Length: 64
Image 1 (cartoon, rainbow, N blue to C red):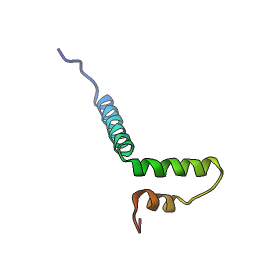
Image 2: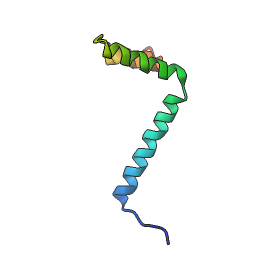
Image 3: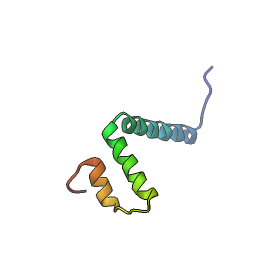
Image 4: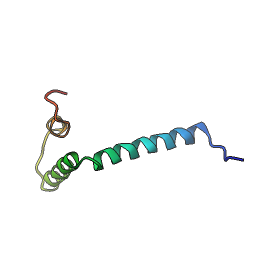
């Protein structure tokens, strides 16, 4: 007989799966991964960049 889980446990697992899917999508796209690594390097060096600029850079959008 299958093990029963609560709705709360199910929702938590569902959320974890969504995060994993997002991570796989990011790691599967070398351009996005490279931009994230560049942003981390800038942050480590104390160089700032606005969230809006970073989002535009990563997503390649002209407007948010």
